[in-house]
Image 1: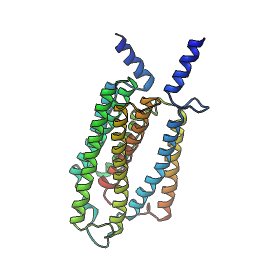
Image 2: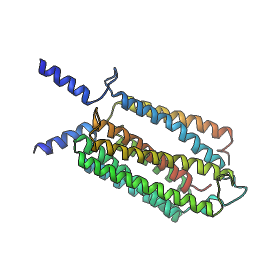
Image 3: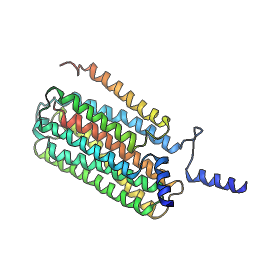
Image 4: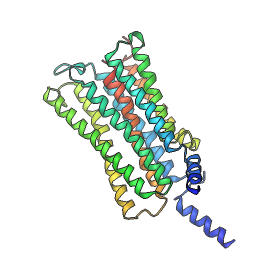
Length: 103
Length: 204
């Protein structure tokens, strides 16, 4: 009983239970399978947007649940997302300078 | 009163050094490091995006990429994130044997991924894509090579961590040390999530 209570308290303190992590991993595996299917099945105009959306969903799920950002202090989220945002801004600007987005 | 003082000191020592925010300095440093790593990989990914169509000599990306093989590698790395988070969870429960078991499986999955990357590089080289063959080749090997080095460093960190846990040489909070290495490992995984989509699945 004590062990079950400790496990429950531990899950509450540190984010999720082991079963929760396994569920997240199953969802991630399914999204990966869907991503790979775009190589074999023609998604038409949805090909690029669907791949980018699936990539972002997987990224956010790993960072939020496996890296505990969802449950941890907002300062950690600030540090990480500031770096990520800065990288996106700098490199999108750099790619635009090289006319990457002009077909 | 004396009991409370002793308990507080023990608790502080158990959770390592904390900043004025009440957060662990080690964790703050790790997140800051990972934020800066975004800039490193952002540079490598954008360079690849810019040069992937620049193939003067040698094979074109679509001629050499083996999507089924890379998909399996991606799945292996993704599952290593699950085993890593289970190791962190076991460490928080102070279950050393399960922590070591999950760390061992994570290290094995990481080594499998690196092995797959070595195989892929060897195959590409035999098919005529060297580091200096084309701008595509240089940017591809730089990006995936840097990522591979990060995974290899992660495997070394996992093996070292298993060693110091077995010898009981961690002086501070053991769970926090496992969590810090876990953060690095998951970061390497999220970088691969981006590389897999932008480099392999979206054609130039």
